[in-house]
Image (cartoon, rainbow, N blue to C red):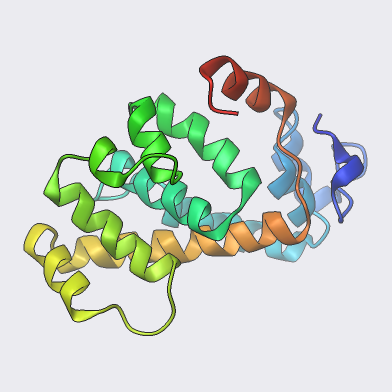
Length: 189
């Protein structure tokens, strides 16, 4: 189980979760987001359904989704999500330099020579790292490389990620020890 001593909300487990949330604990520890959401079981299924759809592979593919999730989490400063999605990003094939660039540790050009991916990251940055409308030049650059429906899907991913970033940060959800150990072994802690 996670180190729950730092969480601001009780992280339920199989013995404390309500009956309506038990299905999420049948395979063991479901992680701190589910363990926290289980305290309000009527929100658990709808929240996970939305988040699962928004963050799942979708039409745009898992690589683009992970670009959006990790970059948004880095811009929002969500340590929990940065840790979790650094590991996921590596698992889906992003290189260590790409991950470092998304986390703001390297210039984007060093990790992403592709103008197409840099245009997508520019769109993500405009959504997650600024307020107000997306600037016209960012829109034009993104549309030169991506269809409108792709940008809609990525925008929903960014929005769902921002929700989870605030949720995880606000409640100070802990990162699992095995994730921290993996990042340490990868030189990404």
